[in-house]
Amino acid sequence: MTRPSSPRLDPTTSDDWDDDTVALLDAAGHLNIFTTLAHHPKLLKRWMVFGGHVLAKSTLPARPRELLVLRTGWRCGCAYEFGQHTVISRGLGITDDEILRTATEGCAGWDDADTALLTAVDELVGDHVLSDETWARLAGDWNTQQVLDVIFTVGQYSLVCMALNSLGVQLDDGVPGFPPGTEAGR
Image 1 (tube, rainbow, N blue to C red):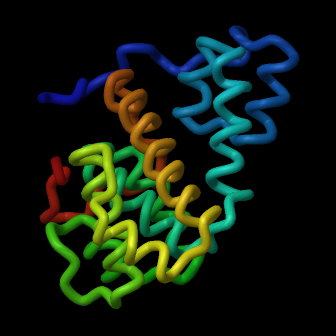
Image 2 (image 1 turned 90 degrees about the vertical axis):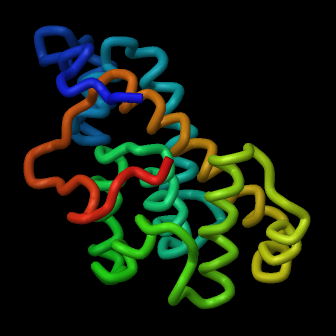
Image 3 (image 1 turned 135 degrees about the horizontal axis):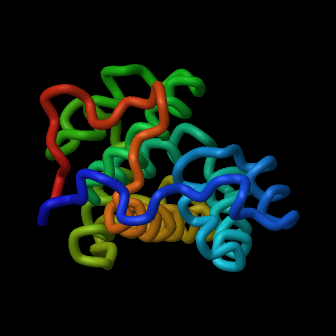
C-alpha cells in the first residue's frame, strides 16, 4: 500500500500546546513524531510512559534493542522510525554495515544471538507469533524479562510505525530514511 507523501496531520505548534504538552515536548524533544501526536495530548502522555520503558528502561541492552527497532522499522516500511533509530544506533557504535544489514532479507553475516533477534522481528511482524525454535533460541540467550522485552519492543515499534505511516509524519531535518538501495521489507 502506498504511504502518504505529505502529512495527513501537520505537526502542532506552540500555539496549540497547553502547559502539560509543552513540558512533554520539552522533555522528549520537538520531533515531528511528538508534535504530530500532540494533537491528542492525553494519548501522547500515556504512550510516552510505555515508549520510555521500551526505549530506556527495559531489561535489554541498547545494542540488541536498536537492532530490534531498526528491523521492525524496515519490516513495517517506516522510513521515519528507521531513520531516527539509525541516528541512535550510530551513537551506540552500531556500524553503517550493520544498519544496512537490518534492512535486508535474511540474516547473513549475523552471529547466532543477533540472528535470533532479527528472526524474532520477522516472525512477530509477519505472523504475530514467535515460533518454538525462535522462542528457544531467545530463551537460551536472554532471561524471561528480556524475552518479554523483545516481544514488547517489536510490538511498541510496530504500533509506532503504523501511526507514523498512517499519519504521513515526515522525516525530521538531517535524519536519513532507509539506506540507499533498500526498500521497505514488507
